[in-house]
Structures are given as structure tokens and as C-alpha cells.
Amino acid sequence: MARIVQKYGGSSLATVEAIGRMADKIAQTVQNGAEVAVVVSAMGRTTDGLLALAGEVSDAPPPRELDLLLSTGEIVSASLMAMALGRRGIPAVAMTGAQAGLYTDGAFGRAQLIAFDTAHVEAALARGWVPVVAGFQGVSPTGDVTTLGRGGSDTSAVALAAAIAADRCEIYTDVDGVYSADPRRDADACRFSCLTYEEALRLAENGAKVIHPDAVRWAMRSGIPLIIARNDASDPLAEGTLIASADFRWKTPAAQGAAEVRTAAGARK
Ligand code: ADP
Ligand code: ASP
Ligand code: MG
Image (tube, rainbow, N blue to C red; front, side, top):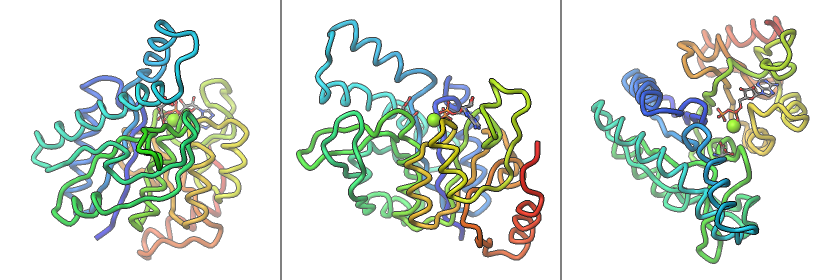
């Protein structure tokens, strides 16, 4: 049985209707026989809204309190997603980053992951439940809630995939993969069907916001294949971008063939 981590960004969860559509997608993956763990970001522009709220009550919000505040956005998404899955007959359990065992250093606002204790997530999977983990957050050695920096849910997802030895991590967003430039700003940008970790890291470090550089680093270190696709893709491998090592081969011959063909095709629109 394939073990898959699916991450849904804020752009894919902007409304309760969108949460329902993503829940349908997760339910479909489970019904197709995969073991799925989910990581979610805050709905739409919630994080910006929370930052603005903090700014209204303080000129210099204390970093610890700010992180606690910002972490709530992802907790809302995780809770609603678990409810939406339950309504579809898919048992699910929402977890904060701390409950999921994501341990970080104490650098509020830019915390680095130091360990992932997956006991809680593994227990849910063993029971046949879908763990729905709030991205972007963890807990420090002093028990304080931390956040990983803007866009950090990507990192949560890949780190979780690595920690539970998932077969792949699928990142669902509002564009259909990684482009040579931001497709919203540059009409001539080309979508890459395949990228090596090194190529993806260069793009992420140069501002390709669609994937956080730390997420690519985690994937590279652990060898987890990453697929970035639009949230309505029916075949994310065919329609999105695969990020993997240069010599990566899928375990199944059919998928392996498809990935090789795409590697040969290189970048395409
Ligand atoms: P999510 O909410 O799913 O995390 P983000 O807003 O963080 O989504 O990232 C997706 C956005 O990244 C796209 O809407 C796109 O405008 C932007 N983007 C910037 N550079 C690139 C690129 N090179 N390839 C694809 N998307 C890019
Ligand atoms: N919600 C956080 C942000 O807006 C984290 C994320 O989206 O990955 O930056
Ligand atoms: Mg993002």
C-alpha cells in the first residue's frame, strides 16, 4: 500500500467549499487504497490577517505570543479538514504541530526542525485514520509553540513524509507545478515536468514561492520524491512537476516509464 503525504496550501483552502473539495480529493486517494497523512496551511490569507491583528494591538508583538497567534490559522484548517473527512466517512484526527510530534529549536518566527516523534501520527495510520497535521508550527524544548517562517507548511509536509518513510509527498497549490518564473507575472514562463532536487532548490532559493527551500532540502536529504500540482489535478504526476534525484525510478514499471519519458522531454509548457 502506498503511503502518501498530501499538503494543501492556503490557496487551496480559502473557503469551506474549497476545504470540502480537498476533502473529496483526500477521500478519493484513501478509497483508492493509499495510506494518507495530510498537512494543511491556514485558510487563504489568514496568516496575513493574524499578523495585521497583532499589529493593531502592539507595535512590537512579543515573538512568543506572535507565534502562538499565527499557529492558530493552521489549527483551524486541520480541525475543519478532519471534520470534513469524517462527514465523508473517512475517519480523521486533527493534530497541532506539537501533537504531531514536530520538535523545533526556540527561534520564534524562523524555527528549525530538530526532531519528529511520529508516534501519534503512526498510531492514527495504524488504526486506519487520516492524521491531519497543522503545518508551519512545532514545539520548542521549553514547550513553547513555534512557527517555521512564511511558507513553512511545505517544510512540515516533507519532514513528515521523511519521518514516516512515505513513498512520496504531494504538494497541492494554485498553479500546476514549478515554472521557470512566476507564471502569474511572466506569460512566457515554462512548466518543468521534472526537476532534480538541486534544480528545484536553486529555483526555490531564487524566489519560486511555490515550494519552500527548506522543504526541498528535507526532500533531498531523505530522498523523498516531491510532486507539485494544482489542487484540481486528476493525475498529479502527469500534470504537475516531479522533484526527485537524477537517478530516481518509481517502484512500479508503468510509473517508472512515465517518469523517464518526462525526464527525457525536459521542460514543457
Ligand atoms: P500555497 O498557498 O499553496 O502554499 P503559495 O502562494 O505559497 O501557495 O505558492 C504558489 C504561488 O507561487 C503561485 O500562485 C505562483 O504565483 C507563485 N510562484 C512564484 N514563483 C513560481 C514559480 N517559479 N513556479 C510556480 N509558481 C510560482
Ligand atoms: N500560513 C503560513 C503562511 O502564510 C504558512 C504556509 O502557508 O505555509 O506563510
Ligand atoms: Mg506556500
